Image (cartoon, rainbow, N blue to C red; front, side, top):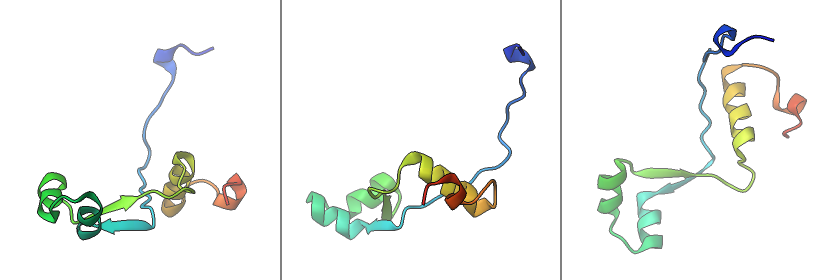
Length: 80
C-alpha cells in the first residue's frame, strides 16, 4: 500500500455548471422586502442562480465535467 506521501493527487481541469433558474435582484428584493440596491452592493451582482430540486451536488459536478468533455456521458453515469 502506498503511503500518503507517495500518492499523486492534483486538479487537472475545472468546470462550472450554472443552474437554469436565475433570479434577478428585483425578484429577490420584492420577495425579501429589502431594497434592490442593497443586494447589488452586498453581493456585487444583479442576479443569483438558484438550484432546483433536481440539482444535486453530484449531478452538478457531473454536468460541469460533461461541459468540458471530460469522462463519460450523463446517461452512462445513470444520472439522467
